Amino acid sequence: MLRFRRMRTLQKFATVHGSVHNHFNAERHLYSRSNFKLNRAAALAEWRGLCTA
Image (cartoon, rainbow, N blue to C red; front, side, top):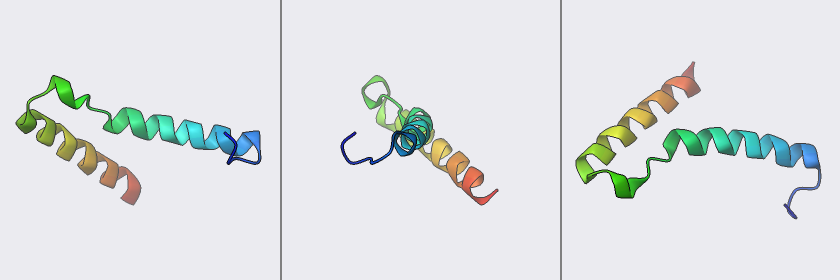
């Protein structure tokens, strides 16, 4: 929090970070490597689709 000069900037960052983290957080220890890679590829494809739209 000390790096943010304004509370508004911190709130914007936290909102975006929370959305991105929830999208990519796959809890790796719960999945096999092959399933993790498939889920990660799907998340990246969706993210790229959102960025280009």
